[in-house]
Image 1 (cartoon, rainbow, N blue to C red):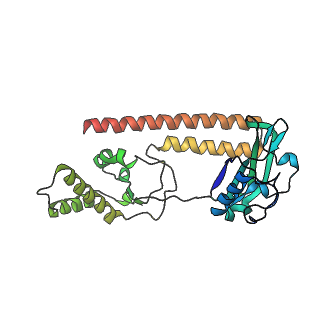
Image 2 (image 1 turned 90 degrees about the horizontal axis):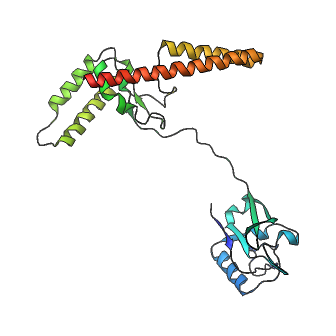
Length: 276
C-alpha cells in the first residue's frame, strides 16, 4: 500500500469540478494555481486526496493557521483501490506537528493476516546418533540455527547402530573421485556423502518439529517440568494463594534444574571435543 503525505503548499478548494475521482468534494476554501497542480499530479498517479473524503466542520478541515489566515495545505493521499480502507480523517487542532501546522490523522482498516508456518530446509539431526564420536563432531553445526527456523529433519534416531551408516559412507568414499580436488572441494564432497547416506538410511521428517531443543533433556528435568505443570493445573483450578505459591516454587525449581542440565551438557560436549 502507498501513502503519500506532506505539506503540498497549495489550496485545492472545496469544489471538485474537473477532478471527480481525485477530489471527493469535501474541501476547504477556494482553489489556487498551486492547488490545480496538486490535483493534476494526484490525478496522474491515480491517487485520491483523503482530506476530501468526509464531511467535516470547518475547524476539522483547516491544517494551517497563522493569525487570521486559515487554509488547508497538508494532505494525505492513497491509491484509488485503497480508498475503501480509509475510515476517517481528522485534524487535531490542539496539537502542532510543526509551527502553525495542525496534526493531521488518518484512520485506516486492515485485514489481519497471520502466517503460522515458516519455510524450512533439510537438516540432519546427527545428535540422535548413538555413536558418541559422531554426535560430538557435528553437534554444534546441527544446532546452529535451531531456534529461528522450522526445518525438515533426517530421522537419524531410527538407527539401531551406526555400522550400516559407516559401511555406506565407506563405500561411497571409495567410489568417489578425489584426485585433483582442493581441500574445500574434498570437504564439500565428503559432506555430501555423509548427508546423502543419512538421508538414505533414515529418511526425512514430514514437517517441522513439534518440540523445542532437547539436547539437554534428562529424567531430572522431565520430573521438574511435570511437577510444575501439576502445580499450575492445581492453581488454575483452586485459585488460592497457597496453590499460587506452590506453583511459583515449582516453576523456580524447574528453571534451576533446566539451567543446571544445560551447563552440565555443555561441559560434557566441550570435554569430549577436547579429548577428540
